[in-house]
Length: 219
Image 1 (cartoon, rainbow, N blue to C red):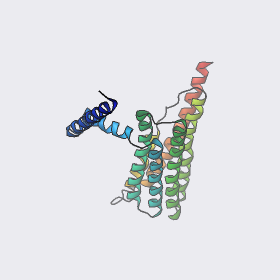
Image 2: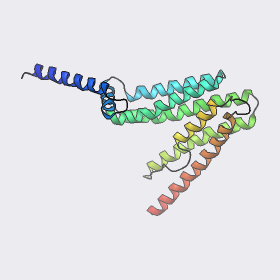
Image 3: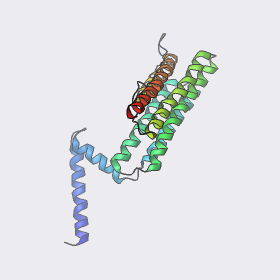
Image 4: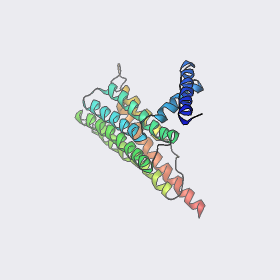
């Protein structure tokens, strides 16, 4: 069998496998495998997913500025989903790179801050100084949660402890945005910011104590 015939046969086998996967029930292993292989063979890169997440969060911030808070919540959720997919896709596809990991981590910090800055502007326009201060605290300690982990890992200490992980922070802010202007007295954006500020503060100190204990045990 010639190389051309072998190549043609391989293409036919892949096409048959693809058709079988498409006929399989949604959620089945063969369909997931086929979707995964299609993504890997595509030109999609983890960096493109990361930049899509940034775009989603920029749109969310703009919608907060325009006082379209529910739509801002939707955009924030979609952008955050992209943030979770880029790392997984990088590992799954083998297309990751050291710069891609650096870009992903950097954009994650930027995106969270961008949306919170827009929320702070929203509270400032309403004259709610306490909520503005809480938003500033949420930005600061959200960054500190990430910074403490990075510094700990530079010291050789794994540091994923704490109650306000990235996923938890996304859920809290998403709920706040989606129900910022709910019916009656249901307005959850301001309470969400207070909760976010308190939990990120607690998590920062949880990680400081964790690293201290780990380093002392290593002495």
